[in-house]
Length: 180
Image (tube, rainbow, N blue to C red; front, side, top):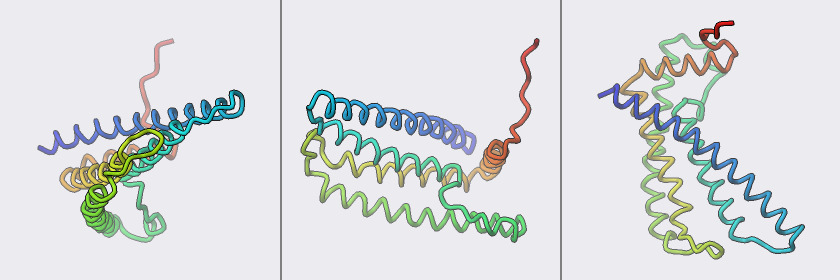
């Protein structure tokens, strides 16, 4: 059960990393087209501006979910050196539980917000506002999944965090070199 959970989590992390990068690239391209269109052609493109906003909203919330999966969204670094490993582990669990409680409330109120405001239509693209607010539900759902994964498979989470820390510090694990 936990191995399936870890595999799904790893797949979701890769997918989120790709989506965040693709959305950032799309936003840059759309804004460049908008600038070119407005200043060189003289035509406004309000639909592209709205799509850029939609992508930025999704980029923000999906990126935040990715940070939750890496335990980088809420970090209390200044206590790391002052607490022993057991207390720091307990602090991590407390942070995960508090984050999970916040995400559950976010799911409830975001769903309510989608019901109330989701019927409105964006003026330039004609998309329902539910597309905009759906990013909050996606963030909360993914965040809850990653917290559950971390609680049920702590050894896999610890190994992943150790690899990420080593990469961040420039101490990547040695890889096989190509033959010369």
